[in-house]
Length: 302
Ligand code: 13P
Ligand code: SF4
Image 1 (cartoon, rainbow, N blue to C red):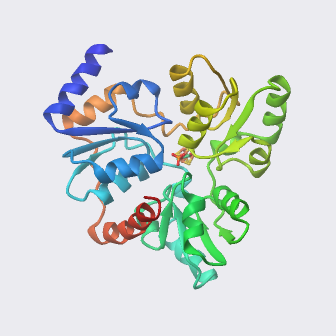
Image 2: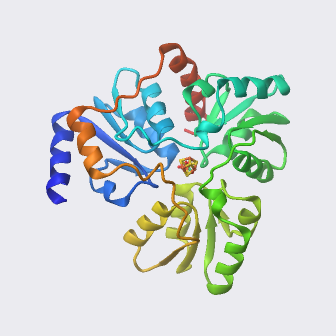
């Protein structure tokens, strides 16, 4: 293993490459990653890097976003199977139909969407800046896609804007049920419950804190509490356990795993760098239009 890690580091240097890893990745990938974080942080790092090659240990839409932000760089996704089930719930035709049903309302799209879908939207958001982005539009109504749950959570947080949502969802986060939280609270009465806004509304209502991947991690680190029930993907719990052994982190259920995030292994990262595979490309016109949507988000949340 350590030989593989040093080979990856050597290749990275030789090829002036950077490795970005989402917090849901297998934790071993952190050993070689330059940046580990949530979608917003990784988009920012992708926008700022001066590396020639970006290896994205994340899902397809994340690598696609990095490519849109860096049309002249080589962006590699180690395993092409790494799609996001939520992003695949809406295509170009469906976003056009959704807009036609509610004309003249600004469209916010969660970054968990394809480049084609982004071309039809006004501004992007991630789970960490969704409230800020919707607020920045300063309109009584917005369309929000693809995640119904994040959209409705934003509506509740703001209390000023009607958020008309598309019926997309994350199958991993929806595995967490209200009863799971009730049971966990009974078992660990002192623990704080931290949840991702992609969860069911009933789950979020029972949580002490709701936020993005990084928001959850930051809250757990800064809290005076010692025990936490985590209602999001297992990768977050693995990292918290590794980095803060003095605190206790309980994954709400064993199966809260995004299978697509877990494809990449260190061997795949090595092969990606050695063979410069699998290169992500985005048609020029699509990339230019999608970039407007992504850049508006980066400007508002700077
Ligand atoms: P973050 O915005 O918290 O990184 O979440 C991305 C994601 O895919 C959650 O399921
Ligand atoms: Fe997509 Fe859900 Fe996986 Fe996040 S956890 S990448 S939303 S399928």
